[in-house]
Image 1 (cartoon, helix red, strand yellow):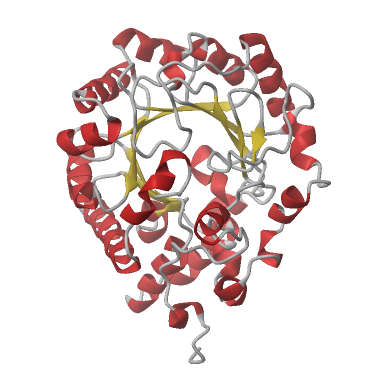
Image 2 (tube, one colour):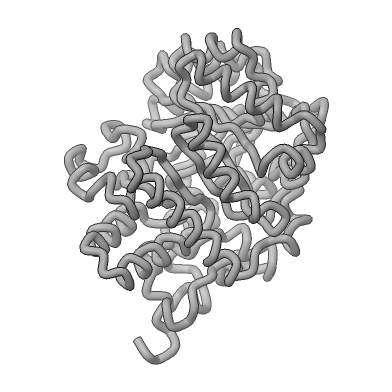
Length: 397
């Protein structure tokens, strides 16, 4: 997760994180990525059921789940453990989390235990009443997935009218006083929609937008051919930076982030150096604090049946199940070779990743993408768009 607005526009500096000792339990949410202890943000896919059929769904969500799901009581036991372990955030996801009737109950329970509770949703089921309920329990944030304007988004969602329903859900959140933002997954089918998304967040006063790079998992595995070329990726990241800076210069405060490709960090720093930006050195310091990809360390995932994964995309490998052992024990048990290596993955990446000058900033990027394309989870991430010269392996420094 690269905070474009934070880094490029200078809305934070290293001292902001250092002031809190960089401890997860003390850092405010906007600085959590700079923690030194990397207590995991936990994504809980609380159901596989979903009312939509998104073509890039990493969870292979279905209309009606027939699989075993944690009960309310089992989920509360899980939250007890996460809270005691020090996990700062629980992200309720799915499928569609609003398909579970106990979402509000469990979000309230997590907040009462001192955790930040957020949800990732398609937004179509957020009625005015539901938005007020979520606000009343102390939910910190609602992330609504939109992958373009009406025609493009409805194609991705597999349902005509999904865009209008999601926009209404966003408005209901705003009316209830809930912080709400957008989640957009970039690929060749919707990259031309990025400027329109910036127009939308400005016109409708949405304070936050996260632009996700495509990860080859779930139904997203069928879209590998639709991923952007390296050249196109560079272009859209430049566009995101340009539009973010334009809003900032006009006094419009928005939080803009890119997610799931840590090449964005060095790319941002190198651009700032080319521009002779005096903050470039501070930005590099913050990127090193961020430490790049944190699968299996600073982010983890629990599936609807209690299985524990390194992140929400790595579903085929389970480290255990919380119905048999608490998450805290599973997460710290290094007897599993993969878990042990993920805790210090920089030692194990291969090829240009191993030789890259930005390894401390990127941490080898996404292992899931590397494995999906090459069959070797320690191979270089094929979505890295930095040139050999930029990463320092062409012999010219």
